[in-house]
Length: 138
Image (spheres, rainbow, N blue to C red):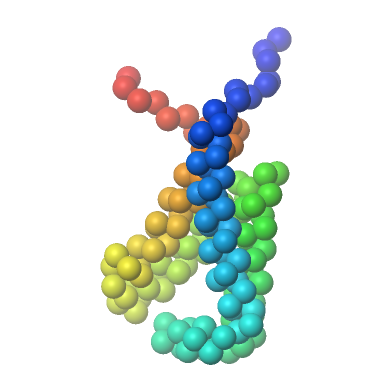
């Protein structure tokens, strides 16, 4: 009978992953919060990006962002949260591509966040490392 225990995560790797994930959660809480308010800068920016800029739409996006942040932050649902976050970031990147936003500061910002989110999760979750092992060499 095989053992189903997961290998332990070294403390430095675990804390690096937690810090990376914490940065993502903090960003999502901030982003969701300003959309819930919704601040004028949010609705103005939405209009510049080709959306209606309505307060209802902003609040809906804010609520969705906060739910994704919660799912990502909780260990039991963190992979689901990362998957949903990837979809959210993909939509943001598509929007910036459509309106011709600057490449490195706007369009690829979603990629940076996605790499940070998945990297943090990979470092802190042995289940994910077992599912997607990194094989260096042969």
